[in-house]
Length: 216
Image (tube, rainbow, N blue to C red; front, top):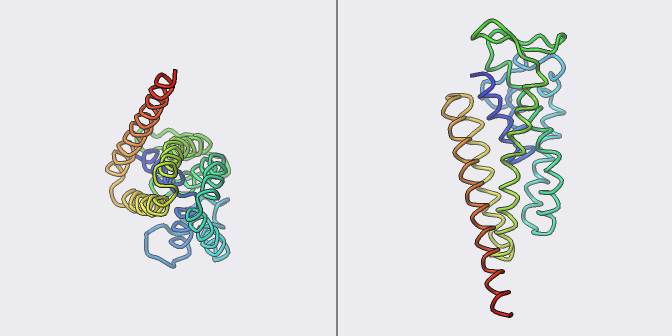
């Protein structure tokens, strides 16, 4: 359950890189009552509960959100987030694994104790899984944004961005109250996005082939 939940937190970075980190920092700093407290964080990540982190992630999210109102800048940010989203996802997963794993974290040894069999798994694995989920979620969304730009000349991008915000917040909160429901929803969202992206690309390629055949 712990890995499933931390994966959901990590995946939210694929929707918005800085928004989930902003939420986590505000909760750890006791600004909003989401239940994530500084003592839940690994020792090395206690800084996430500082007001400096809150201010930094808040300002970064505001800039990230504003960039989605400008189509050209939008796609540049999307490309950069191919690299940033996995890093943010890994950070979120490691930061939240202590919240979901009662046996706790041994930061010095670099592992978290598992409750189901008394064993342990490396924090590096936790981070890798969270980062991978963030990347898997971000790629089809990036493709969808390109399609939105082509079909609406960028006019619908702001609405798409708002929808991503809502889903990111919903997944974040759901992971706090119903881990398995959040994980199932995450898998469903990823499956739907990948299906729609592949289908849209296939339709576009089909139309291009038809146009080419018509010309020749």
